[in-house]
Length: 295
Image (cartoon, rainbow, N blue to C red; front, top):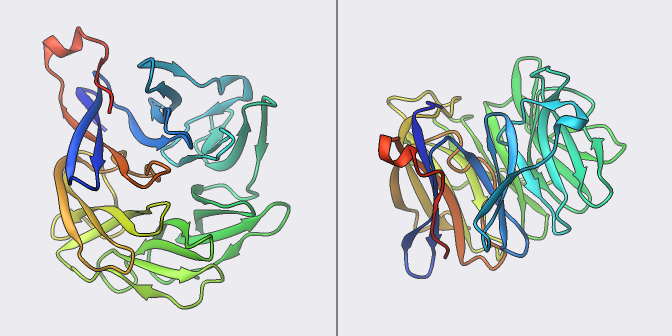
């Protein structure tokens, strides 16, 4: 991502089909999670993790250096207890494992056995992630102290899996049929169903609302972006559709890509979701560290 950008955290109001600005920063931030109580955000900046309080409008770094974590990437989630699950390298190694950071116990636990694992889904029992194994990107599910299970078995480039329907189903994107489209499957990898069919787009990062009614996702022009890549600094579209794939519509055309909406950013009441758009940083804005507006 270019460093001379400002980042706009935007809120999409589903009921009114309206975009609202939450905050702007004179730096690149990426991939917002919304807390269970909708009172703070977690996002990344410059390989670090940050917490932004929506009431006080105050940003602070989340301490990870004492665990020797480095290269914290865009794939992180918050559970209802405030614990953070993240993908990161350790001891200056870029290779990514998945960790649980228990905030109350101040304890870090590694959850994966193999590197190049990127978290996207979380349930009470499992973690769900993309892993690079034998030069293939597949979707894996893993229970604590058990071996990982490959659900997609090398059929195309598979990424961004999340649980939905009370953790009985998984949504993800894959280019198994050419362009990258949105699919669903059961948690054992069976019953794969395709939801999107527009080959003009490469569709990425589907996120299901907590009430299981809607899916938001981003897309790239398939003529200009390969199906197995999700680059930053691109003109992209943000879509919203029903959970069955019907009534898909573009709700925003923005400058962004990787970092805009890599992780689930729905509020717990399913009324809103958050995304990040980017603009060239102007000199006068650079003198104002944070310019915020609450929803």
